[in-house]
Image (cartoon, rainbow, N blue to C red):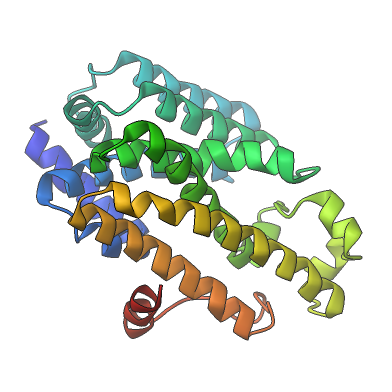
Length: 278
């Protein structure tokens, strides 16, 4: 498969599977946009394997280990695998740290084998693998002026976005048998898993989610310090991601954290307003 064809395919995957992400990376110059789409498509593959309800735990583990083997084989890639062909070119072109891809696979394995998290420290390990690693990989493509200073900020932003994802997707994750909200915090605020199952949004739930909200805001604040280290278009791309997700956070806040009756989502106009307001 030609590299151009592979990039076209990962672009299609990104547009189909991640409208918010595709909306943000549209700002990037074409070479960077294609590279970030390749990273997303690989992350999507890992996530899909980890979430596949038609595979046994052993089959999911084998699929994820195959992803790890593909990472270790780079820059070699099967000629008929568009995602890996594009990933090979992107990681070589922008010197994406191989460890970020390994961490991503480790996060997928964690997701496939674990459905509860005792506390924020344990959850943070998961978030660093599935989201912080993506932030670091994408930042290598953006090309910050000070890579060492950019790394902790990029990781913090990835954690912020994942924290907002966790808040938004409580109902969806419950349907998959997962609770990402830390167990000790559920206990602290008097929220049970029965409350989640029944979609109860009483005072305890609101206090719990306010706590998650503050964590997301603190991580977002640290992550936005990445912007001055990026060129204008890369900074606009990151600002778009951050603005959209903060818009979702504000929407949840306005609904008193009722994420059960309607999944938080922004219209195109809402996304523009959220980015401008950031």
